[in-house]
Image 1 (cartoon, rainbow, N blue to C red):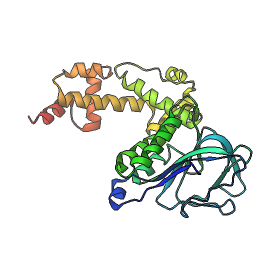
Image 2: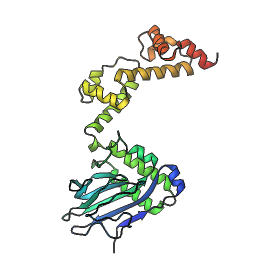
Image 3: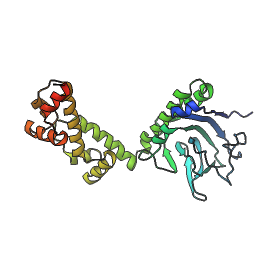
Image 4: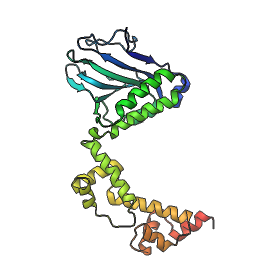
Length: 295
């Protein structure tokens, strides 16, 4: 008796319009020496090692190796070793093939998903455009969350297709944040998010940006380049943009005196603030406030 569980989800037009939909989910165990892939798969998903497989142009798959080891290929003859803790994002139109090591077998879980919303999640700069493999930290709850979600899809996929699709997308997004994945550029992106928060919380002060770079274990040249790549502007430009946005909000939605707004948002004097504001809006802070109030 086969205790592996596979569930396929038909996609309705309204689910496509929602922008996120599930195509299936499963958990399978392949024991040492057992043939792979298992023959009970639908013809849409079954593949042989010799031929490999290409997913339909409307489907992605999240494949997670829970235990064991094996290989995956995105180009024929170029095997990449994978094993317990590896999450793999398979993309539409991307040829691939994978199989467990006959000596160990493996335990896998997977979810099929698609839609316009997902395409934004798996696109750069969040994930590489092809051959995406993420090592998931053992201390995370990813494994349990994925298996639980597979079970929910299998038991209630017809009743809750939208909320379960959102859960699946959230799980994939969490791979971008997983601790072991945080090396190289993903790690720098985490540092940039932390730097953004620090800047936002210190708008009224003078920030030592080289020291801030050091806080995240980076030299200032790398920090500044990474910051610009992530935010589209240099650190000081970003700080000034936040200051300007905060000043506009206070001018339009409060009675806080202009001199106090200048101080709270980190401008060295009310005169400098007025010039800065006028250069960007063509209005003085007083005129902007009057126009927003309808006077």
